[in-house]
Length: 461
Image 1 (cartoon, one colour):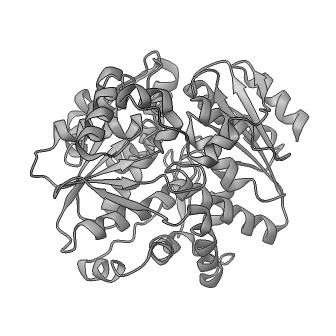
Image 2 (cartoon, helix red, strand yellow):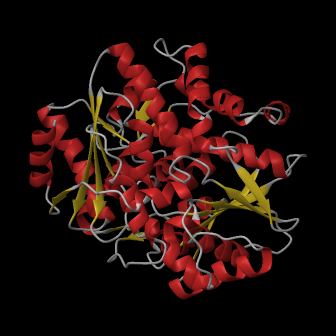
Image 3 (cartoon, one colour):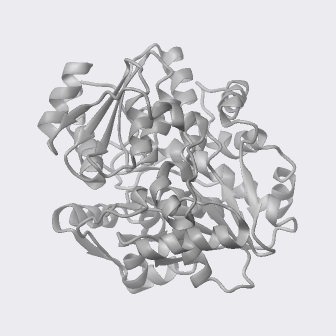
């Protein structure tokens, strides 16, 4: 499998180069040059596999290279989905015949990002040991990516990791999951800004490093293709358990950076019979506004009860635009305009093609609380605020008769204040999260400044 950039100037790379680069040298995102498509007969065969086997079968075509053999990759998959995911790797709650919740919080950091970042970490460990090189990882988080990346990717002593998080804009539990981890090769960095500022610092640091060639630099955000690969698997797994006859159904995805939703779209391109992908946004509704108008416009980020979606630049949307436009020059222009002017707009025909698959809706904070309360009162299930956004938007946009799967992206324990407010019960943190609340935090502080970030990385590497 070869990969090329969405912006057209970094082409035909192999998987290991894509893994180690993260962001393409022209500032774009890597996408595979071809997409394997499964027939109905092949889907029925995949349906019989357990989670680890399914992960191997679906993702190895993208990973296969001279440096990663079939046996080696099977071992990586087994190591990824092992005891760190607890008794259950993944589970589904049935609300009724047409509504199901896919619980993606069984991993070591209680968030959906564990499914991809454990895989990414094990791939890094394997490749770095084999190539005998060191790697500097830099990533930004709006909440869950940071702790999942640290847990998944810091195991190799060949890695030095810097995770940027926005000051005061992640939950206390999310912050402490990062800042109490306690490994010398992990440096947490509080940035005086929002998530988009952190994400821009990461991308700007990559561009700076391309000029200076100072570090072997890699990414853990969903700009890294492996993040998408690891998320494709649970779309197939959950579909197979709900639709035995492979009839189409829809997925409802609360999302800000669009990686989780793009993984669903890519699953559809691979042949999974997905009818619609419903996007759930909070008050920072850049994606919902885009699917309403075809215009992507950055606005001021507002703090919400679902902080992982407090985003105004959805990085993975670039991969979606690349698919529909198939014009790297135009994609490059769109995202330069977004950076410099804060706005771009696609043609009506492009938007109409997208709307064959996507619909989007938004939910404010008050209604997010009501959604948590409603699910608890009716089904005795506690959901986190992001899942609550998805559930409410899905119920609004889909007919009652349409079968759908809601993605539950994080454990409610990460957002206890909001959840307690909603269900009026003094619920407690799971034991593993409770322990970190008493640990001492350690992190660096910088302004929203590339110069300060470069100085810090130089000092700590």
